[in-house]
Image 1 (cartoon, rainbow, N blue to C red):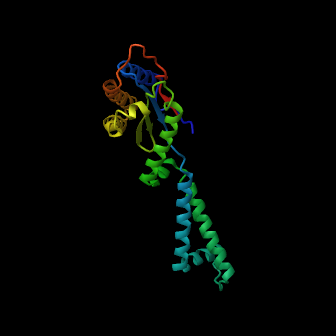
Image 2 (cartoon, helix red, strand yellow; image 1 turned 135 degrees about the horizontal axis):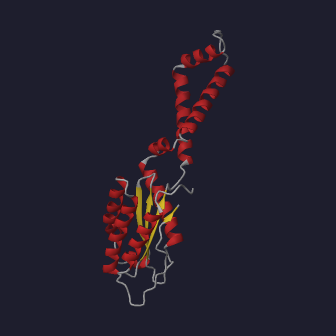
Length: 227
Protein backbone atom coordinates (compact mmCIF):
# COMPACT_ATOMS: atom_id res chain seq x y z
CA UNK A 1 0.00 0.00 0.00
CA UNK A 2 3.06 2.26 -0.30
CA UNK A 3 2.19 5.49 -2.09
CA UNK A 4 4.04 8.51 -3.41
CA UNK A 5 5.14 10.86 -0.65
CA UNK A 6 2.87 13.78 0.21
CA UNK A 7 5.72 15.69 1.82
CA UNK A 8 9.15 16.99 0.92
CA UNK A 9 12.33 16.24 2.83
CA UNK A 10 12.07 19.72 4.35
CA UNK A 11 8.57 18.89 5.59
CA UNK A 12 9.88 15.72 7.19
CA UNK A 13 12.61 17.68 8.93
CA UNK A 14 10.07 20.22 10.14
CA UNK A 15 7.89 17.52 11.67
CA UNK A 16 10.87 15.77 13.28
CA UNK A 17 11.92 19.05 14.85
CA UNK A 18 8.37 19.62 16.16
CA UNK A 19 8.41 16.16 17.75
CA UNK A 20 11.82 16.82 19.34
CA UNK A 21 10.57 20.13 20.77
CA UNK A 22 7.41 18.54 22.13
CA UNK A 23 9.36 15.72 23.76
CA UNK A 24 11.71 18.25 25.31
CA UNK A 25 9.15 18.97 28.02
CA UNK A 26 7.69 15.51 28.58
CA UNK A 27 8.51 11.88 29.26
CA UNK A 28 6.04 11.02 26.52
CA UNK A 29 7.23 9.69 23.17
CA UNK A 30 5.36 11.03 20.12
CA UNK A 31 5.11 8.94 16.96
CA UNK A 32 3.65 10.43 13.76
CA UNK A 33 2.27 8.37 10.89
CA UNK A 34 0.95 9.65 7.56
CA UNK A 35 -1.00 7.17 5.41
CA UNK A 36 -2.26 7.67 1.89
CA UNK A 37 -5.24 5.44 2.79
CA UNK A 38 -6.11 3.01 5.54
CA UNK A 39 -7.64 0.27 3.39
CA UNK A 40 -8.19 -0.73 -0.23
CA UNK A 41 -11.94 -1.22 0.36
CA UNK A 42 -12.13 -3.97 -2.26
CA UNK A 43 -14.97 -5.59 -0.31
CA UNK A 44 -16.97 -2.36 -0.45
CA UNK A 45 -16.35 -2.06 -4.20
CA UNK A 46 -17.55 -5.63 -4.73
CA UNK A 47 -20.62 -4.94 -2.58
CA UNK A 48 -21.50 -1.91 -4.75
CA UNK A 49 -20.97 -3.96 -7.92
CA UNK A 50 -23.19 -6.75 -6.60
CA UNK A 51 -25.88 -4.22 -5.67
CA UNK A 52 -25.83 -2.69 -9.16
CA UNK A 53 -26.05 -6.16 -10.71
CA UNK A 54 -29.04 -6.98 -8.50
CA UNK A 55 -30.75 -3.70 -9.40
CA UNK A 56 -30.23 -4.48 -13.08
CA UNK A 57 -31.96 -7.85 -12.62
CA UNK A 58 -34.87 -6.16 -10.87
CA UNK A 59 -35.08 -3.64 -13.73
CA UNK A 60 -35.04 -6.50 -16.23
CA UNK A 61 -37.89 -8.20 -14.38
CA UNK A 62 -39.95 -4.99 -14.23
CA UNK A 63 -39.30 -3.79 -17.80
CA UNK A 64 -37.90 -6.66 -19.85
CA UNK A 65 -38.79 -5.01 -23.15
CA UNK A 66 -35.89 -2.57 -23.02
CA UNK A 67 -33.18 -5.19 -22.57
CA UNK A 68 -34.88 -7.56 -25.02
CA UNK A 69 -34.99 -4.76 -27.57
CA UNK A 70 -31.30 -4.06 -27.10
CA UNK A 71 -30.49 -7.75 -27.48
CA UNK A 72 -32.58 -7.99 -30.65
CA UNK A 73 -30.81 -4.92 -32.04
CA UNK A 74 -27.47 -6.65 -31.50
CA UNK A 75 -28.87 -9.71 -33.25
CA UNK A 76 -29.69 -7.67 -36.34
CA UNK A 77 -33.15 -6.46 -35.45
CA UNK A 78 -34.85 -9.82 -35.78
CA UNK A 79 -37.85 -10.21 -33.47
CA UNK A 80 -38.55 -13.69 -32.18
CA UNK A 81 -40.19 -15.50 -29.32
CA UNK A 82 -37.89 -15.62 -26.33
CA UNK A 83 -37.45 -19.01 -24.68
CA UNK A 84 -36.94 -19.27 -20.89
CA UNK A 85 -33.34 -20.31 -21.50
CA UNK A 86 -32.69 -17.22 -23.62
CA UNK A 87 -34.27 -14.97 -20.99
CA UNK A 88 -32.10 -16.43 -18.23
CA UNK A 89 -29.06 -16.06 -20.48
CA UNK A 90 -29.97 -12.42 -21.12
CA UNK A 91 -30.36 -11.84 -17.39
CA UNK A 92 -26.96 -13.41 -16.68
CA UNK A 93 -25.29 -11.28 -19.37
CA UNK A 94 -26.90 -8.06 -18.11
CA UNK A 95 -25.95 -8.77 -14.48
CA UNK A 96 -22.39 -9.72 -15.44
CA UNK A 97 -21.87 -6.61 -17.56
CA UNK A 98 -23.28 -4.34 -14.85
CA UNK A 99 -21.11 -6.01 -12.20
CA UNK A 100 -17.95 -5.78 -14.31
CA UNK A 101 -18.70 -2.20 -15.32
CA UNK A 102 -19.14 -1.10 -11.73
CA UNK A 103 -15.92 -2.83 -10.67
CA UNK A 104 -14.05 -0.96 -13.42
CA UNK A 105 -15.64 2.36 -12.45
CA UNK A 106 -14.67 1.88 -8.82
CA UNK A 107 -11.05 1.50 -9.83
CA UNK A 108 -11.16 5.32 -10.04
CA UNK A 109 -9.98 6.28 -6.53
CA UNK A 110 -12.05 9.47 -6.24
CA UNK A 111 -15.27 7.63 -7.08
CA UNK A 112 -14.45 4.67 -4.84
CA UNK A 113 -13.76 6.83 -1.79
CA UNK A 114 -16.82 8.98 -2.50
CA UNK A 115 -19.05 5.89 -2.36
CA UNK A 116 -17.58 4.44 0.83
CA UNK A 117 -19.97 5.12 3.75
CA UNK A 118 -18.53 7.34 6.47
CA UNK A 119 -18.87 4.77 9.29
CA UNK A 120 -16.89 2.22 7.27
CA UNK A 121 -14.13 4.76 6.63
CA UNK A 122 -14.00 5.65 10.32
CA UNK A 123 -13.82 1.98 11.35
CA UNK A 124 -11.06 1.11 8.86
CA UNK A 125 -9.02 4.19 9.81
CA UNK A 126 -9.29 3.30 13.49
CA UNK A 127 -8.28 -0.30 12.80
CA UNK A 128 -5.25 0.76 10.75
CA UNK A 129 -4.27 3.37 13.33
CA UNK A 130 -4.52 0.72 16.04
CA UNK A 131 -2.24 -1.61 14.07
CA UNK A 132 0.26 1.21 13.55
CA UNK A 133 0.06 2.04 17.27
CA UNK A 134 0.74 -1.55 18.28
CA UNK A 135 3.74 -1.74 15.96
CA UNK A 136 5.20 1.71 16.52
CA UNK A 137 4.23 2.95 19.99
CA UNK A 138 2.41 0.54 22.29
CA UNK A 139 4.73 -1.09 24.83
CA UNK A 140 7.73 0.28 22.94
CA UNK A 141 8.84 2.47 25.85
CA UNK A 142 9.90 1.42 29.34
CA UNK A 143 7.24 3.57 30.99
CA UNK A 144 4.41 2.87 28.47
CA UNK A 145 4.55 6.55 27.44
CA UNK A 146 4.18 6.26 23.67
CA UNK A 147 1.51 8.21 21.78
CA UNK A 148 0.60 7.97 18.10
CA UNK A 149 -0.72 10.72 15.82
CA UNK A 150 -2.15 9.06 12.72
CA UNK A 151 -3.41 10.86 9.61
CA UNK A 152 -5.12 9.06 6.70
CA UNK A 153 -5.34 11.31 3.68
CA UNK A 154 -7.95 9.74 1.38
CA UNK A 155 -10.42 9.17 4.22
CA UNK A 156 -9.84 12.71 5.60
CA UNK A 157 -9.56 11.30 9.11
CA UNK A 158 -7.05 11.26 11.95
CA UNK A 159 -6.58 9.49 15.28
CA UNK A 160 -4.55 9.93 18.45
CA UNK A 161 -3.83 6.75 20.41
CA UNK A 162 -1.94 6.69 23.72
CA UNK A 163 -0.17 3.95 25.65
CA UNK A 164 -1.20 2.91 29.16
CA UNK A 165 0.73 5.49 31.22
CA UNK A 166 -0.75 8.36 29.20
CA UNK A 167 -4.25 6.90 28.86
CA UNK A 168 -4.45 6.48 32.64
CA UNK A 169 -3.89 10.22 33.15
CA UNK A 170 -5.49 11.82 30.07
CA UNK A 171 -8.99 11.17 28.76
CA UNK A 172 -9.17 10.38 25.05
CA UNK A 173 -11.49 13.38 24.52
CA UNK A 174 -8.62 15.72 25.42
CA UNK A 175 -6.98 14.97 22.07
CA UNK A 176 -9.90 16.50 20.16
CA UNK A 177 -8.15 19.89 20.06
CA UNK A 178 -5.04 18.35 18.56
CA UNK A 179 -7.09 16.52 15.94
CA UNK A 180 -9.02 19.67 15.02
CA UNK A 181 -5.78 21.65 14.70
CA UNK A 182 -4.40 18.91 12.46
CA UNK A 183 -7.42 18.56 10.19
CA UNK A 184 -8.04 22.31 9.93
CA UNK A 185 -4.63 22.81 8.32
CA UNK A 186 -4.83 19.65 6.22
CA UNK A 187 -8.07 20.99 4.70
CA UNK A 188 -6.06 24.00 3.54
CA UNK A 189 -3.38 21.76 2.06
CA UNK A 190 -0.94 22.32 4.94
CA UNK A 191 -0.20 18.70 5.82
CA UNK A 192 3.15 19.33 7.50
CA UNK A 193 1.74 22.36 9.31
CA UNK A 194 -1.20 20.32 10.56
CA UNK A 195 1.01 17.54 11.89
CA UNK A 196 3.28 20.05 13.59
CA UNK A 197 0.27 21.77 15.19
CA UNK A 198 -1.05 18.44 16.46
CA UNK A 199 2.36 17.48 17.84
CA UNK A 200 2.61 20.82 19.63
CA UNK A 201 -0.81 20.44 21.27
CA UNK A 202 -0.16 16.84 22.25
CA UNK A 203 3.21 17.83 23.68
CA UNK A 204 1.64 20.61 25.76
CA UNK A 205 -0.82 18.16 27.33
CA UNK A 206 1.88 15.58 27.98
CA UNK A 207 4.14 18.17 29.61
CA UNK A 208 1.46 18.76 32.23
CA UNK A 209 0.63 15.13 32.97
CA UNK A 210 3.98 13.46 32.22
CA UNK A 211 6.76 16.04 32.67
CA UNK A 212 10.22 15.19 31.44
CA UNK A 213 12.50 13.46 33.95
CA UNK A 214 16.20 14.31 34.37
CA UNK A 215 17.27 10.88 33.15
CA UNK A 216 14.77 10.74 30.27
CA UNK A 217 15.97 8.91 27.15
CA UNK A 218 14.53 9.30 23.66
CA UNK A 219 13.25 5.76 23.06
CA UNK A 220 11.34 6.19 19.79
CA UNK A 221 12.42 7.91 16.55
CA UNK A 222 11.21 11.48 15.98
CA UNK A 223 10.82 11.07 12.23
CA UNK A 224 7.47 10.95 10.42
CA UNK A 225 6.52 7.54 9.06
CA UNK A 226 4.77 7.55 5.68
CA UNK A 227 2.89 4.41 4.68
